[in-house]
Image 1 (tube, rainbow, N blue to C red):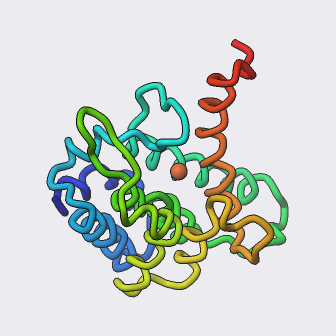
Image 2: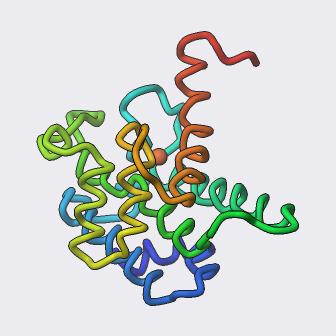
Length: 188
Ligand SMILES: [Fe+2]
């Protein structure tokens, strides 16, 4: 699985300066996939990115890549535009956090009949927590753990790295339109 995952994430991982961290990122995905009982990338590509709303066919891997690209875009918008960026932005952590923000979903979601449902593990710990636990187990920096923990509602009102803000906003830019369409609130 490592090789297949590496291939999927390579265009993002190759942008990282710290290639040891890049390798750790793939190891976290691989470990979470094993813990969740997923054996192939094709299987993972069948997982909807959320169970909270219709995803209109967008899978977890596509979502993860789109969110990471969105977070990179938000960071670069500041870096490339501001004469002096008043924040300390670590692009490696933006990329690592983007790729890992939903890794816990590999354990939170399980196959059921011809669909998917929340697993027992997912009831015990939502994906921001379970994802951060795997990342901590494999020795990822606490800043990346912060991004994983705080990207969703767990981060509301909590201290966060700026990289977590970018990942959160990119994540909700992909999630909200699905919810809005389901509620008839998306103008189209
Ligand atoms: Fe997400």
